[in-house]
Length: 458
Image 1 (cartoon, helix red, strand yellow):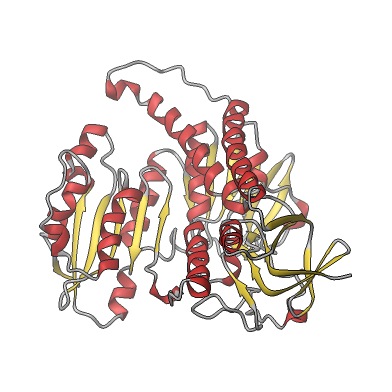
Image 2 (cartoon, helix red, strand yellow; image 1 turned 180 degrees about the vertical axis):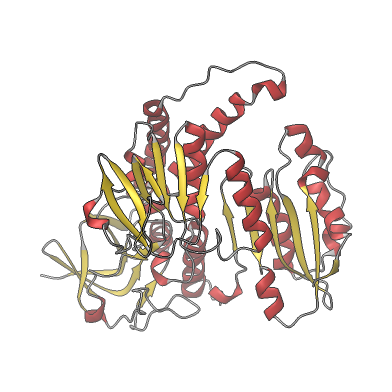
């Protein structure tokens, strides 16, 4: 006998529980289905555990720099088992929080198992058949493992299995020079591993401006991370008990050889085994669910939020998807995906905070652009903290005086960039910040100085 619900939420990641809570408040009988980890990627294998590891690595790095600050902490050693225990404890707090949140919803039932469509708005879960007027997908993604020669003959890690590592790799080779790979590269170098990053493109972080990518590379190389770019034809092989990265198109010695291999080359959506074709839900060639500006799919009564819809690859975009869906369904508020401004961070140390357009996008916009740049060596708070690497950069529309984009690579850049982002959302001119009085001594107080030195963008 089929079970009938007002709504079914598939996936308990960032957007799923929040939407279930809203459906609960609206008195909707709701089933939320999760086949694996409550809390999804962010809570279990993404944001929370990795930033916990980044914090441990930062503490080690700062202790080793003790002489710069007037103290001696020369005998600093890492205990990876203890680092992992700290990470696991913080993750457990978060997963318990989400689990208890769901348990407290009076109209919501948590069902553990693998959900598959058998017909429009009809879901099978381990022998049960559920039907609802509305179905919401929040199934997330997983690490992509490329089919390069030798991949099935060597052991490798992904960002997920990396969370189980409790011993220090002697030499960690990372394939992928983008956000995930670079965060792991710096943290494990600080833990004490030798680290080599291999990237097939000619530069790290292909979406970032040349000066941003170059400075990030320099920051990592100053700490001893080896970076190899332009590796277009990689292959893998075993060399004794080690893993070697070679160039299939060229002979000679291996490009890199290490004790452990980590793939950090992007993610793919968890949509391949949901029976989406039986529901009439269309996907693109990469498997991402196609949605409109309100997260509606091609199937009547089905929405898709989060990484699986291809409209954002971050926890904050998944949360915003939930807000858009809830606003349109219950608040008569026509919020749209296209209203949001791109924003994200790279959580190396110092971090990169990015909002809006990069330089290439600004050039293509056809606008007359003004630009400003200020090195962190000009920032008193950065000098006081001994954190002078990086710079702040901003792009402005000369006609409207509105901010187009910014990159803050430096001390607290992931936080400071929000002062620019918030003004971008208001549609106010950049002079709103330039004329504001900021607290001294802070990094943010130099943003008006940055904006006071705008020049035509070449």
